[in-house]
Length: 559
Image 1: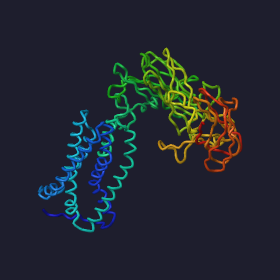
Image 2: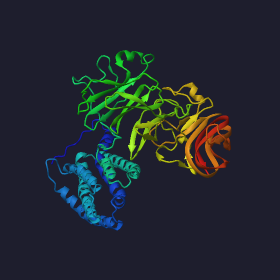
Image 3: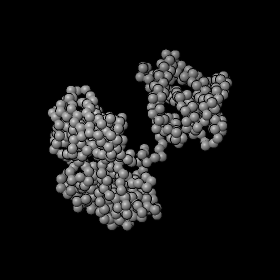
Image 4: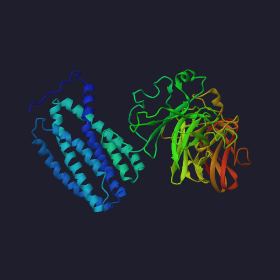
């Protein structure tokens, strides 16, 4: 067979780097699979499948015997391969086969342990002893024929090896974290292995990742929102009813004056709308119909969501008050709807006569888990409306009505937090300054510098949180609900900043002081402690700072 030389017109390191990275794809699949088998197969067999350790150890020992035999045979097979594609290129088909059988290895069927052991043994032999061995045996032949120059070949081999090892190392770092989330869920393990071995992602959960499906439009193909004085689509929600009919809810309810003045002239921005869709979920079947107005003290602003509960339709939305989720109820999916009440306020307005937290808009809805209902919503952090933190509370549903729930520090805990141990300061459900709490704008304002706020080190982000309360000034208060105390005797607070004074602890805003914690912050984080009155029972807890300077609260503890 004639050897064809690949020209190197640029004749430099960049060309070798490019080809080395491309060539490394062959090493990457082997490195990834080796990491999965060496580091995680035994754990999968014992902890996920429940197989005895001695059984999987015996199986892996036996497979090593096949590995030794196929190592000798693979070189002979490759050396005696003669096709129009050459000696080595046909074995590139081993790459998808390695991925396939690796996935099958970590997708063992439900069966007796012995059957599962035999299954894993067969999959291991096919993956490692057959296809991975053939791929490895063909690599040197392929490299020699594709790159006849020794210097070029050595450079590409070195680059591809390093690149493959880096990716393998990354897998070794990231995969254990994913494994800890998967636990003993066999289906989760299959998805993880697919993610590691196949160059595309799949998902069967509501959390995504989602692919673009199309634009909702009228039967003539015109997208909703593109006709003259059409509905302004915003924050849509979808309901598939029991009869299979599909309903889309959307809309925006903004003032006719101000920044949306021009938009109001072009679009319908006067409340929430409903339209039925054809089964393709992209074509409008009925004309948009307004189901709830923006007018009124609890008029519609945004965030449409529909729930069908006990045969009635509950429309969940964010109101013009900009701090609350409300509900309205109707007998049909397209209304009419009558206002029901407030579900939750991210300032606890309605529970209290005062704004107990810094407020902004909110989005969310209701979820039933077992016999209980929960409301999901968000609050604001970092002193503006575009930094949002998800929250959840249990909510009372009785005789067709939802009753406003208060913000707590318990969230989905289902019961008061233990009145012992250590907690992060950021679980405060109430926060205000000496001047009270304000409404956040779309951007940070100078006025906000006079108030405490929730923040984190570095940029706002989705994970790796280290949130704390910053800018705790004289008169600032952080409140927590609820703890179940059993003879509380001492409270400690971890803080830093620059300030001197005392933090007083009370069981309600302005209540009797149960502890006075003297603080003297001078830069680094430091714990400060004080004795308390002996407290027992389910109580809320409020910390108020009296002193100079600015301090930051990180954690507190009970003893």
